Length: 224
Image (cartoon, rainbow, N blue to C red; front, top):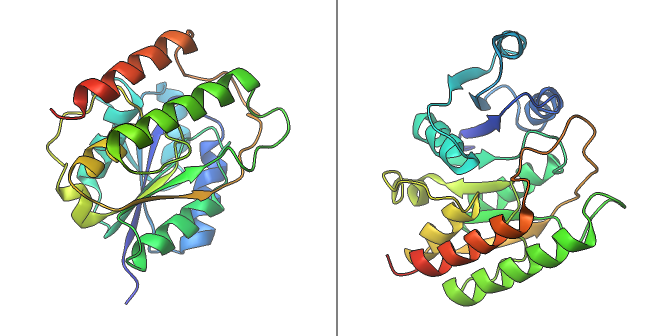
């Protein structure tokens, strides 16, 4: 029996989400549950409703909170998420889900850094990402190469162990950190990363300050 799969999409006015919805349904079939946790305008939400996805209006702020709100409502045995700007290879969701389904990992992140489209990520961001990922790997003793990635797959049992944890501002690395602390198996897979085609990034304007805060939180939350 194929485990039911749920996909949670944290969204604020991202045009790329419509392509992700189409691609995900093609990959996983009609049994896929798609939950969009949204902070967009009423007009954008009306467009989303036409796709037939379930929409939850985000009550909090931050991508980790959005994803957590969606995961708490999801019903699948395998739980997925990806950024909605369509920069992450959607096919990576299927391969990550397959690893979880096979029992080889409890949590799988997409590693963008080995398969970057030219111009998709500048040298400054690549350096910062590698530095933070190395720091994470040392602190949590789980080797991950791209902790700033927005794509992951997670086993239902693993999620239930952190369901009631209040997210802190580590992005998707929050889930990796909390699962690592509980002894779950973390892996990553290489995925393609594309140039953003629509709009501007919703990330913090100061990447340096955001990175410094993330580094501090990784240390502070390690034994909390």
